[in-house]
Amino acid sequence: MAEISKNIKKFRKESEMTQQELAEKLNVTRQAVSNWENGKTQPDIDMLQNIAGELQITIEELIYGQKISGEPAVRDRRPLIKKTVILAAAAAAMAFFVSGYDSWAQEVAEMQYTVEWFFLSNYLLHPVLFLLIGIGGFSLLSVFFDIHVRSRRKRMILGIIFTALVILGPYLGTRYWMTVNNQWDWLWYSLAALYMYHPYVYLLAGMLLYFATAKR
Image (cartoon, rainbow, N blue to C red; front, side, top):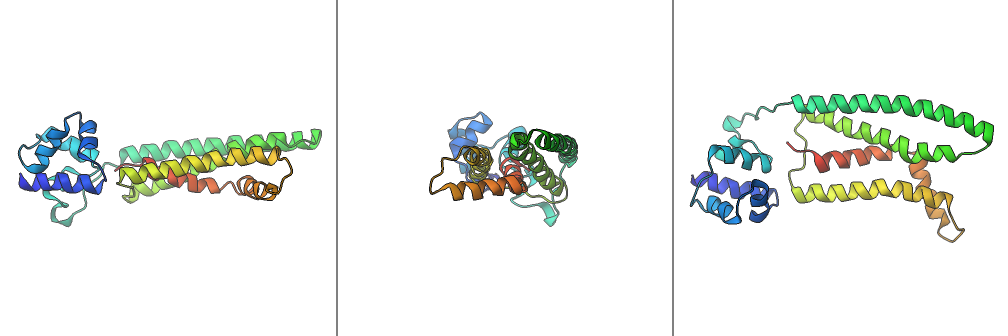
């Protein structure tokens, strides 16, 4: 019992989670979590499963503090494989659509001498495509390697960075087309060109989104 109490406290702190936060996730009181960690009471087997799930560890790690006999815990990879297949199918479908759209936009540009339709492609379609490729790539890696960010706070920070990166592209595109000729125009042009001509920057966004949402 003493070991389980220490392990609950140990892994909760490693996850940068307060007793109150863990209690809310488990639908119990903070006092209940405190009693577990102090050894006054012990959670039943169902609650141990829930605690392990919220702390993103195996129940063996929660009970023994480490993997038994140094053997890696067996993970059920089926959900990851399913997720990877869905992402791969979505990326393939998106690539097919983007290819057709770009050909159409090119024809329109040559006929009407306009590039407005490329705005949609450069700042929405291509980013979505590379975003799917980025997420799918790391999802595939996670099938073979246990890659994730355990800390809830760190995942939140990565989510914020991802959001800023995604919002920045359309914003720069708007500045690119609606520039007012001031001394900072060169900056907007340069940054907008980065997004326009190098959409693989969204591979980084895909990586950030994966780590912000991936759980063991």
